[in-house]
Amino acid sequence: MAVDKETLDQLLAVVRRFVDERLIPAERKVEELNDIPEDILSEMKELGLFGLTIPETYGGMGLGMEDEARVIYEIGRAHGSYRSAFATTIGIGSQGIVIDGTDAQKDRYLPLMATGEMIGSFALTEPGSGSDAAALRTNAVKDGDHYVLNGSKRFITNAPRAGVFTVMARTDPDNKGAGGITAFAVDADLEGLSVGKPDSKLGHHGTLTADVNFDNVRVPAEAIIGGVPGMGFKTAMKVLDRGRLHIAAAACGAADRLIEECLRYAMEREQFGKPIAEFQLVQAMLADSRTEAYAAWCMVLDAAKRRDAGERVTVESSCAKYFATEMVGRVADRAVQIFGGAGYIVDYPIERFYRDVRLYRIYEGTSQIQQLIIARDMIKNAS
Ligand code: COS
Image (cartoon, rainbow, N blue to C red; front, side, top):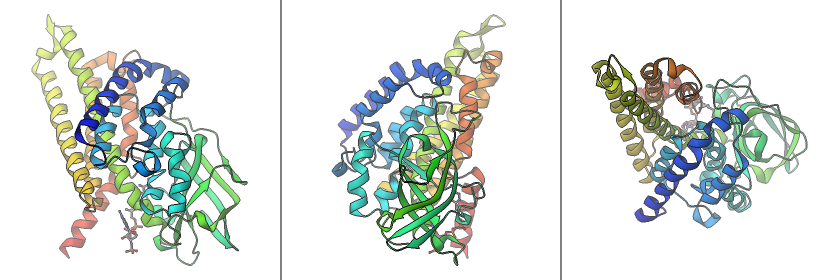
């Protein structure tokens, strides 16, 4: 933990107030604009949200995993796109450099990311490779002291705003697996790099995702994250170990908000002459949501503490992501049920959460990929 308990408590209180007073009231505006209002983005930068996990030496707060999870829980209570606005910069878009980057790469990028001046983005997924990440086809061919990148990346969060991409590309054409992949820190303004038009999505309106295309993009060899070719897949997986816990924490925050909305509505809404919260079938739904959310949050905290203690948490991170994101899907489904017709119309936040939380079970590894990671580890340890 890079901050003491008192500082963390103050930060959490400030973030909670920001969420309640600024972010939640502007949720409808985010949906209408399909973007985060500029004044809110500026306030997020002032609060230091873009530097939460960037080490203090580089101008960030240097939060450990548990503290990050606690802040993300709070942010997760509001529209999912608020978190996405800074999450790639403190998460998958910077952590490759934080975990494996050279000193020169850290010096160059991290101070700019910590203030939100530069947005970091993570480019792994391709039109032909998603779950099978090691099958990626973007290639980087050595040419003197540069590499020439060709290929396309898909569904890249914050691509239209990014200043730097962590790009996984194949540098060894003879190695079709993980060992042939190298991670590069690629500046967004390099010639030949283009970003497609933002995707139209089921939810997360306000988060911009797009294709990123590389057409003979010349990247200096110093851009290889960590300086050693062939390590890119491992860098990506280490980044995702942390990223998956972050998503699990966001799912817990979303569940918290949904439960709060459900309870308030159930206590106000009257049917058959009394508040629906007095009916045991509604109580069962409330209790199931509360119980599952509590279990998920315990998992996130346990895995986060272990990571902070230096343990490798690949499996715990997958368990937490798998359970928390499936949990919030069930909580959102029950929320629609408790709200009834009101849960299906846009005047209430429930239908939006129902759409938005669906993504948590897909990105940064589907639920099925988490199951595979967990079971593979069990089998490996037993054999
Ligand atoms: N940390 C460090 N190293 C890791 C690692 C981790 N979490 N996970 C895997 N590795 C290493 C392995 O140890 C192995 O190294 P060696 O070759 O030295 O033994 C190498 O990376 C390859 O690992 P593995 O054999 O497990 O790779 P697979 O191709 O079988 O795939 C999965 C692994 C399926 C887990 C991976 O492709 C994956 O996570 N897919 C989902 C991708 C994803 O989340 N996409 C979302 C886009 S990002 S928003």
